[in-house]
Image 1 (spheres, helix red, strand yellow):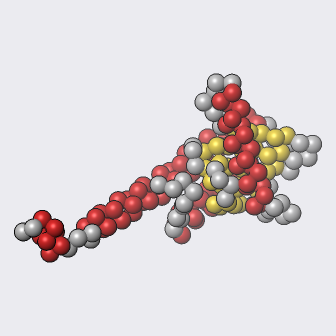
Image 2 (cartoon, rainbow, N blue to C red; image 1 turned 30 degrees about the horizontal axis):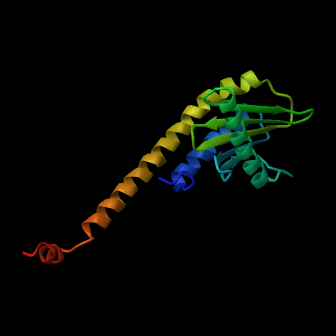
Image 3 (cartoon, helix red, strand yellow; image 1 turned 30 degrees about the vertical axis):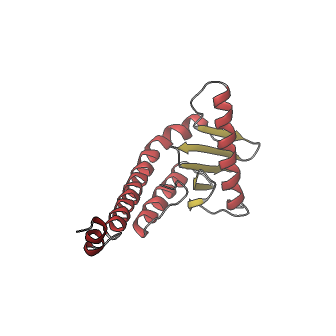
Length: 164
């Protein structure tokens, strides 16, 4: 399974956007962005305004990768949450398993503990959507394998190969 290859159907996309909108409103975030770990945007909620979401997604993914290296240096399995607090803006990045990450941009000071606590509920909802489309991807791969193996040789070709 290619971790960068994601096929979302309309219902999946709508479920993701609904969850991200809930997060955005509940935490009063300016923008909530769901990305894959390669830095590609999957879904977004909130007005991006002057933010370059493509750059934000790729830099956040790079930040997660660098932080993974730091975790390994100190013998920690991973650091799943990054929080950058500025004077006027904050960015919160949460790793969602091996494939995804959630980025929240705040234009007001925010308590990291509250963000983490509230994201736990939303994360389980997002993981349910991920499980649904991962299982659908796996089923599609199994169907493809079954179709290709059943169509490699016709009955006549098999008989010829076996010398019957």
